[in-house]
Image (cartoon, rainbow, N blue to C red):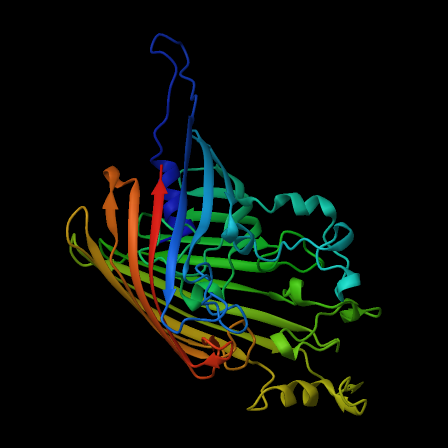
Length: 434
C-alpha cells in the first residue's frame, strides 16, 4: 500500500548509512545508492470475445492498464534509482512501455511542441521541453530537517487511494475504478511531520491533478493524516482540492479576458465553452489491518465533487443561442439539477498468505460516476479474485486473476462490435522485480 507520510518519515529515519573509517577524526556520511525495478506482462481472455480484442470498454476507460484481450501484452518497464544519506533522499523513477504514458496522464504530446494545442481545439500551454518528461514516473528529493520534519519537492506519486501504478506492490493485477478515476501523480512540494510512529501529517501544494505544467496561478492543495491506533492497523485520511484543475480538458475559449483564466465544465461529453469556473475536491480514506501473519484486510473509500461558480449573470447557451444564466445552464446538465455533481466509490480487500509461494485474495468494488464527471460515466460493480504465485526467491510473481464487472449501462464491448452491460475476464500476469 502506498502512503507518503508514514513510509517516508519512518523510512528516512531508519535508512542504513555508510560511514568513513573508524580512524577518521570526523565521521562522514557517504550515503547509500541503490537500483531497483521490474517488468510486467500479461495475457487476458475476455469471455465476451470482444471484436476488437480489448476489455477497456466503449470509451476506453473501463480498465486502467490491462486493456488488451486474447493476446500477450507488455505492461510496464521500470528502473528506479535511489540515493539516501542521514539528511536527505533522492528518487529517480523511470518507466517505459504501453502503461507508462497512462501513468504520466495529463502530459500528452501535441502539435507544434505544445500539450493540447489550439490547433486541436485546446489552449496552447505546456512548452515542448515538457514532452521529454514522458518517461519520468517520479523524480523528487526529500530533505529531513529534523527527526520529525521533512520536505519533499519534485514529481511524486499521489497519496490518494489504496493501489499504486507498480504491479509488484498491488495484490491484484487489474486496477480498481477508484485508481483509474483518481489522480496518478503530482508535481509540487509537501511537508511531512511525524509526531510519533502512530501519528503523522502531510500538507503541500501541487500543480493540480496529473499535470506537469500549470496553466494558471492557483495551485491545488494536498493533505494527509496518518494514524496507527494499534499494531498492524494503519489509517490514511487524504484530501486534494483546487480551483479549475482539469487542465487537459480545457478548450481555448475558456480564456476570459476580464479575469485571466476561467475554466469550463469538466465532464466528458458535457464539456462546454462557457466560462463557468469551479473548484474540485476529493476526500479519500485508506485503511488496512494485518489480522494475523497470513490474513490481511483493507478498505478504500472516496468521495469527490465539483462546485461550480454559478451566478445570475446573463450568458448565451452555446447549444441554443438563447439567453440564460450560468446556474440554469449548469443545473440543466445534471439530472437532479445540481451545481455540485460528484462521484464516489468503495473497495474492500481481503488477502490470505497460504505459504511463502501461494496466496489468494479478493477485491469487491462499487464505483458511481453517474454524473459523468470522471471517466467511466456509469455505476460499476466488480469482483476480482487473484491467486499470486511467488517464485525465484521472490523475484518472479505470477498472478492468475478472474474478474467480473457489471455496469448500469452498456459500456463493455461485445463480439459484434456493439456493447453490453457486463464483462468477465480471465488473465495471468508475469512480474519480475529486482
